[in-house]
Image 1 (cartoon, rainbow, N blue to C red):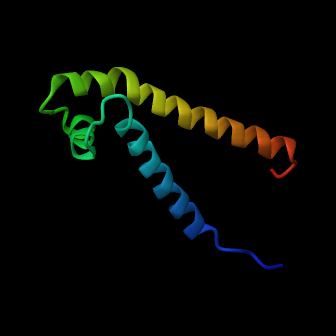
Image 2: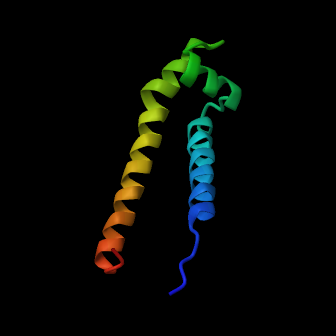
Length: 84
């Protein structure tokens, strides 16, 4: 039986998920540059305090919820399709 190496696919999907996660946090009624998003997330340092409030209180929980709900939908689909 042939087994495919899914390591590349998994790495590619993880990179795409990370990029879309950052893009989801970046876009909105107030566009926040990616550099400032990374500063807020990793160093808790920003040029505008309003951006920090927007990211920490609104956009980050929204993005995390989207990832969790999406992963739950995929798990349910796998169970219903008898793939697992």
